[in-house]
Length: 374
Ligand SMILES: Cc1ncc(COP(=O)(O)O)c(C=O)c1O
Image 1 (cartoon, rainbow, N blue to C red):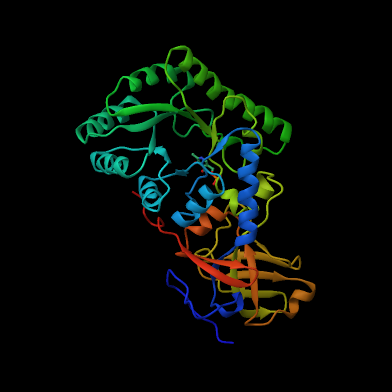
Image 2: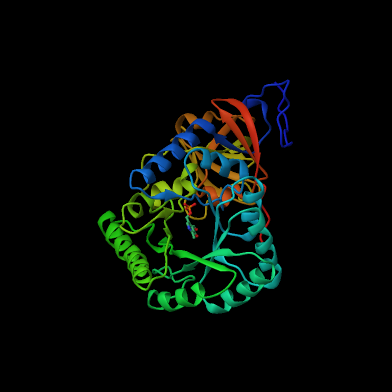
């Protein structure tokens, strides 16, 4: 059977394709596994009466974001204004841009976005808030804003001691609707000792909960208290005072979440399908997938169902496999499937998700926000 390069955004209706029909390398999603992961996170947040606002920075697809809303998410978390635009225009209107928005050009786009959806942006300094207030007022809109608090990641965020004063100032600014606070406990995801991880997450998120109480006591409504990624959500969801979680990448799962963050109970729904193109020696094979196809910097990729194959080395467009035992019979032209080290950074290398149920291609989802970095 010849292999096909299918690159449109919709499937030919008169033909059915199996995985083996498609040319490689491709980014493949196992829909049933993904849906099972999604149901698990969605139920797992509901169990603790926390809302779920999954991060879309990995999938960058409004079709996926809509599917997550259908499964119980309240909206999407985005890393970029452009991602939020894609999500809102794709029908997911309640979007948190977990980032700082600076400059007239972006603020005007944000004001326009307020006419189409209901975005929320992060602020950690009055110098972001004043120009935002000016542009929103001029454009006749009000945009929700939350304060990003530094709970230990030391990336962005005001200190917990500064939250109340900043909230007072934001609350008073026209064009801004103060909506709450967020923090990201990203520095605690890979702690090996699970008791230490639980205690440190409790301590970090208590800073947020205490801030929220402080604001309420001062008469400032604090509707949203947001945090959490896939690597911490199992613990973060049970912390008092948290109202929503941003865990996103868990819908695909990957080696990083499983091996380094010790996230359990999820299935590997995202793979790279690759072809063996070279057999330089009995214990080595070369595949058509390298660093420009999958990300392995945080954790090595694995080959699905093959303990006898390890991913030895990747260059830009070649992958080198080490073969043991039975795997030494691997032939040029055979296919393998790899689970990437880190799904988030792998997806961004591709234009499309090829979506399968079993071996049957059922959909193709474009990563519409890929490359939209502004
Ligand atoms: C602000 C923020 N929230 C949440 C996450 C976690 O996302 P994920 O669940 O996809 O790992 C990240 C990861 O970088 C982040 O920067």
